[in-house]
Length: 296
Image (cartoon, rainbow, N blue to C red):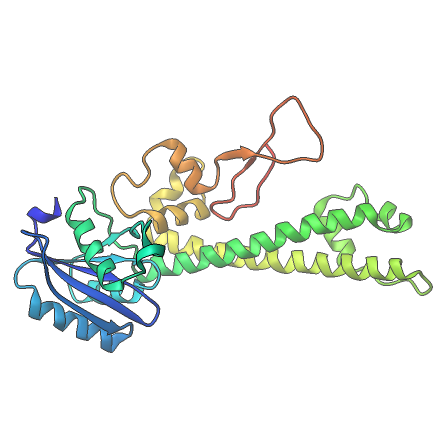
């Protein structure tokens, strides 16, 4: 346990503008000192001086939210040779009745680390942070594409009959190319003009989102090759799954089973909804990693 390895734990409750710190003695779990600093480089330096003044001997920082509000602090401490672990947000079942106390949350973070047998390392690093941002933004582009595709096909079903007959049955790429070049009829009804405008806009939105997702995937692949190229040699592991593994991994046992891996990578089957009832269960691929769900 961590209590047997260090003399003090500095618990950190992170927020957007300021972080709360609590120095806790490993031997007793008692609070030695508390403090608060701004979440900027000057505040990080002050926090490090604060820890040096109140934690003599071996110490470790236990940070809540090291992948979000605490990311800057975790990177700063790592650059200065400090030992850092990540703790999960503490459950606060009585928070509504008792009120939230950020100073107590910092103490809870330190004591949670002291009592943990498996400690998570902060998910920091320049390339790792780059992967996190790229994955998140690519995921939104893929979601925009998925929603626009659904809208496009729905609009074709209800489009004026002549337009519907032109587009029905076209393969996806031909459909997008055709819709993106649609022009309004010289003499047409209001619904015909509206259908052309909507279909053209949706098709161009899909194409733009696809281009974005492709560009992000190229960047993701470059970072994965630099960090863990051996992952790409594993069967069924492409750049998106590999990147999600790199970003999510924090400690041994993080992926505890093949089912957990499938869920993490977005390949776990989940029930798929449909407009009709069938006797054979239908499933689609999950979208945890940002991949478009496909019926299998």
